[in-house]
Length: 145
Image (cartoon, rainbow, N blue to C red; front, side):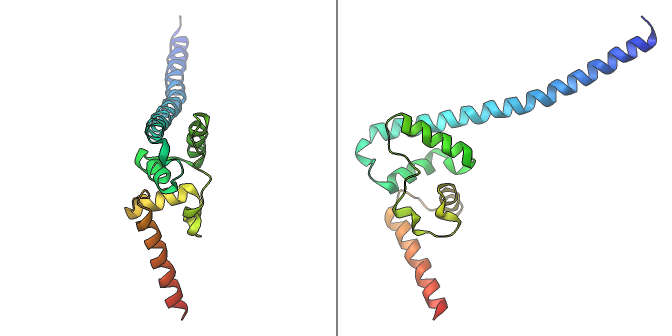
């Protein structure tokens, strides 16, 4: 084996190591996100099945999503979480009525969850959410007058 062959072998080993690292790192991150999603959906499903009488309460359902940490999920991951919930016979989180009162970025489920987390608003407290909406509507109407 010549010195050139050893050099080529060393370069190939270094490239293989870097390539393996660059391939493995995203796969590890993907596995972490999937495990996080599975944990969140598991916690949500256990709480929802224990409180089946609350399935009609949109504020409770939104509050549960908030409590399991769904605000940190991407739109795709949040959709996956909702599909898992529906697969267990529970009401789809994406079908909202009351929470659509917000017509800005909070109109989407993900936007609403992120906004509530940033503003430290508990979405399970319906009166606080509706009070906040009323305050915003008053501010808008007084600004127009």
